[in-house]
Image 1 (tube, helix red, strand yellow):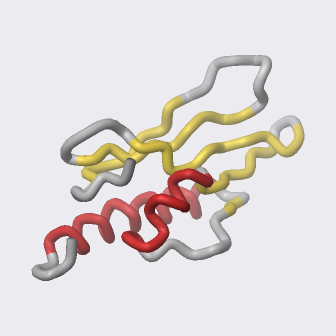
Image 2 (cartoon, helix red, strand yellow):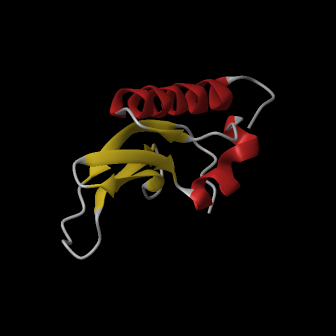
Amino acid sequence: MVVRVPFRRWLHVRHRNPETPHGGFYCLLPIQGQRVIAAVGRYLRPGHLEYKAFNLFVREYRDILGLDQNLEWTLRDDLVKWLDALVHNSFMRYSTPGIS
């Protein structure tokens, strides 16, 4: 379900299941409603994380937030910049008159 209100912040939800090798989920918290999974960290090999936008998030928010095609990162800093930009862009889009 697409949230039509701005996101107020993002958070990292750690995944503690040793059966599945990934580094957790990165969620956006809207002002109203439930958190939305935006990205996941996964291990390509031991000790090496790759970050990727969550497919469902991209499908649902592509048009609203103007998401690109290449949404994979090898550096956490790049993911953090993307998440910060999503929070900022969602607020700007929501607060611009005539755009919802």
